[in-house]
Image 1 (tube, rainbow, N blue to C red):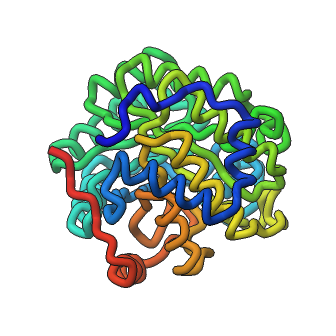
Image 2: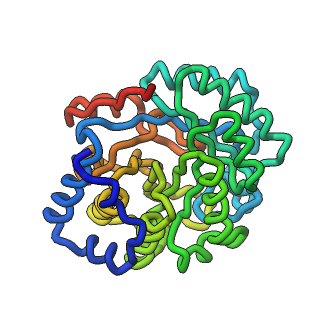
Length: 322
């Protein structure tokens, strides 16, 4: 690494992030590329695949989520998938080039009896040679330890937005609840996957606040998913205003600069992005994507479209870690 670990800060202020976001676009991209190249091969992108292992029926009221039981989105709730079915999906993802397999369940928090099946899924994914990730809602310290014992590599729990705007989107759990889960995950020895959603009606100060909060956690999340809101009919945010593509690219660049050694992932919303917008995001320091035609319950570009885009840009998939 060209950049020393001591250069990685965990004390970013909202004002500093706003100053980054206000830079002239060429200067911002230059700084982001400089940081990116100090920590990563700029031509490699890490590939993850996300599977909904338990869909719908969630009691939370997250305003963006079609899986909430509070909204009529036409999505039928399902039970937790069987282990063999999940591992079949994991093998298909691996054959398509994924190096990390992520499993999501629409729970407020998992019941202890559900964790036994999830642990079996994790062990099976690990036996395939894939990195494992799960997003199951809030965790207690004990539950985090159980998942770590099963071999889970990453746990995803997004902050979604700034602390100030959070109550406009979710009322059924607090911002501190999310921070507590992140602390349990980190204390258990797992890696953290944590990011947010852009385009929910937040202002630029909220966007800067989200990035500043992520970059000021005791340790940066190893993966930082930056989602572009997917507007789903029936949810609270189905009529949210569109996000300026250049603003979104700026947020990717600020995430890269403030969290230099993290994988910054283009997550939900890529189906709405042009190839040119995605290319700018990669230039700004994004180096991870979800691969596959579905993200939990919303659409994602087809694998063939991603392969064509990678070929056009001269990008390659990051090799699996040993």
